Length: 155
Image (cartoon, rainbow, N blue to C red; front, top):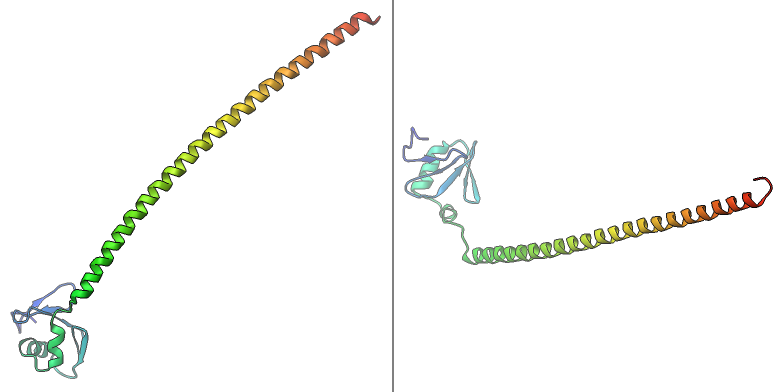
């Protein structure tokens, strides 16, 4: 297109072109379709570059002129901005709640660890007491055996 129309500005990412006269992108599809805004004009057997030039310089049809205008609705834009703000606020509230729940979880985990340590210490002290009781019982039993041997004639 540059060779035939040097004032066309081709974009590299897609087939959209923009003339100096309109400053509006005109998307050209491969084949015989020209996509102008939201409308597709089917062209059979016509050179696409020449027709794009004609439409860009001198729009012959009123339905083609309208889509070249920017499609921005201020009310829609405002509602999108409000929706984005609401989402940001909701996200901030969510993060605060997440932090609170994380702190509660950490606190309850610390309490659980303390309880576990107390239980372990309680079990250890119970085992110690149980050992002492067994040792006392063994000592009593041994002394009884010794006394019995001393008192009997089998000693």
